Length: 269
Image (cartoon, rainbow, N blue to C red; front, side):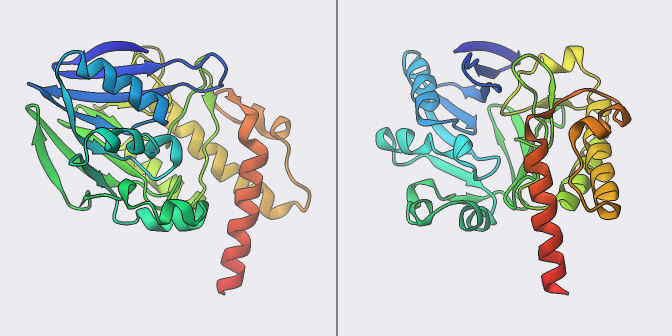
């Protein structure tokens, strides 16, 4: 774990998994002897960060969950073992994600449920203004978290591999919503980007507006082409039409999302 000061009392804990194609990153704000963290990672990640903070007599007081996928909330179990009074902030749509993507186990585990909903909520912590925007597409419960309108935490709406290459989008909930979320995100021209699977240094060497445009282009192109062709479109067929190079790892998964979501639309008509 590498701790880096980002801005005032905003920090980054970077867990660079050498055995994985993406890293885990947890951002936190330290205020006197209390801390707010954004996402928990897995249990091993939250335990490591909690130990670091305890060495400095800092206790985790608040946890914001950017969305309810297990690599973002499962560390709550470890944190709750030591402090049952942690305030959890998350989307009121958290159960929609859990019901759609997980077994009953998580639905029965109230320790991971939000104690406060982020919807239409803003507050001050550590001298920073924190506010939220719904950011559906990757999941029903996805949120964008704004810090002083200077930084925005995008959860998994933008992901990079550990080697810095762009990862394809993963719109588990809705491709169309994911496109709309990214278009809205691009309107915030002066913000810097934080994410659960990339470090803040990405802002120094990536044109993030171009990165957003490329993800939108990929999804729109795939929907357009797949609608006219019967056979699945391989990534090699479209990579030269895209403004940046992607890691193609999730392309087949994207084709599955497209098929499933097209069938859902057809079934509701």
